[in-house]
Length: 433
Ligand SMILES: Nc1nc2c(ncn2[C@@H]2O[C@H](COP(=O)(O)OP(=O)(O)O)[C@@H](O)[C@H]2O)c(=O)[nH]1
Ligand SMILES: [Mg+2]
Image (cartoon, rainbow, N blue to C red; front, side, top):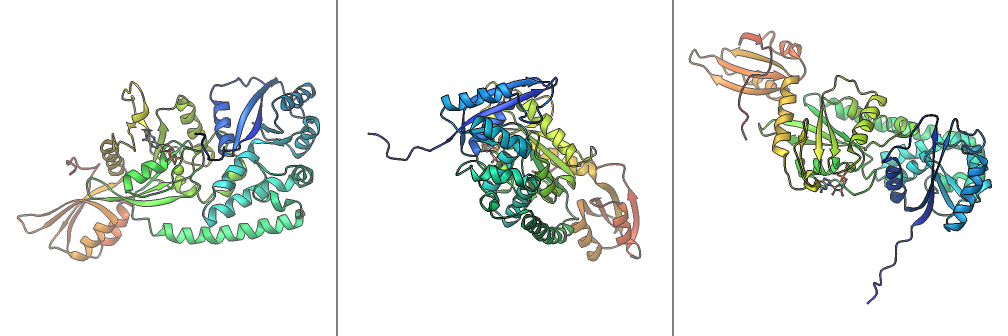
């Protein structure tokens, strides 16, 4: 019997890439674009490329190539052409003229996917801001562009209302969005100020690397995960209890791709703060992907671009190891599977190691059990040991999360403190669990 379910209608897409100067045709690049197009509801039915010294100012590609695209589109029964580049509005309208197709550029495609995925109010505001800022200098071209788009990829978001708004209205909408986002940001600042007592871990990585799934497994949460790019657009932070019973804060955030559009980096500034302020970055890499080398490179470049200091420690976490045939342990980093829970114990112990190395360790002797000091230590330090010694003193071994001075400030003026000695590093004790 034939299936009665409706077949999914994909928009047929002709994908175009130019290689400028000495750019070479690298493997994996069209793979990323194909995945992005799929995620936007399209299907690549043909691909064309052209090598050029410089982009053509009028058409980006050559005139002859544009004519060729028109024929290919006719033959392949498609009227959507997506360029793996950013185009000026003039180039878009001239290309549309020449090919008789709808032409979409890389940023527009990515913005369309973000718009589709945005779930929270913050993400929706951020994406609308990014779309408007990208569209504003191109409004004159867009009039023409959107009037012939109809339905399909790249028509969501401000596109629908674009026809009625002029630049002035777009600008006033932009300032409204900026104000709203600022309000949310200031609320976030209050929330994050309350986190100073914790070690902050942020999961970063290429889109679809398994970041949200890792957070879900570690913290028993149920964040949305999906086998598509940009399933996550927000930052979610959760407490994670480590095998030594201490707590850290772990955050999951938006994934990276090659050449992440500037307008998105700017709009998602606050969302990405959690990456810049991390004490440890877990760089997740899909071990089962043949493009993993390229993904690591993209993540490294993106971290630099969004202003993450080189000094923030990074641990490579190879994910999806259950899906790797002939699995061998990597030379560096931790190999895990969030699905089978393989390697998670190693990961957690490595996190403890990184955390401990980042603390300022000290030994404190108290004349008696001073609950005020001890309570403070428990909430601002990692307390490794509290011993009642034979001489009647209470000896505390702990690591300060926010520097020696924070501890000194607390104990100064207390009559119960007998000695305060800095240690050169974490004490060598076995972790329980
Ligand atoms: N086989 C396997 N698949 C995984 C693992 N972790 C995540 N995935 C899958 O990879 C896809 C992307 O996961 P997700 O956590 O949404 O990725 P994110 O974009 O990095 O947050 C989903 O289909 C997950 O089920 C794993 O350890 N093994
Ligand atoms: Mg995710």
